[in-house]
Image (tube, rainbow, N blue to C red; front, side, top):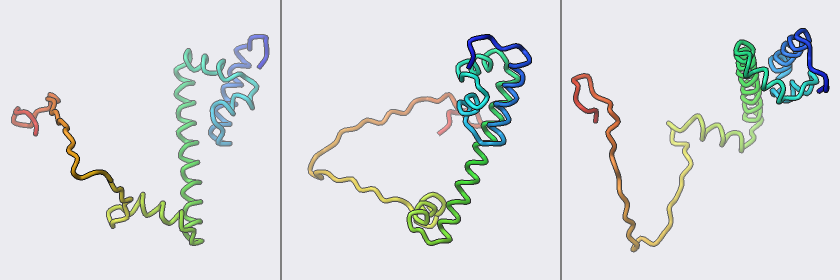
Length: 135
């Protein structure tokens, strides 16, 4: 975050630092930019002109997301083991639908009232193996 443009060596060092902080420390792109003392808009500009670095950043962010998901799943499992009902309910609603654990939603209204609706079927252009339109 300096007024003077970065040298190519500084840019390379900052880019490496951003990727490392995302991958190792689990920071967001903006957080990693702050730690590496570069405005995130500058780093976004670098991503636009450097496709290779953009791909490396994307991979680091995906890896970070996997790490955070693993942490969340571990915390959820811990809460379930401790008997926390909210965590148990969440798990069952998400992972045990095939056993009937689905949220039930009711629809209320005046049953004497009629509702008109129209269903349109559009040709998707998809055909079956025999060349006829798919059903």
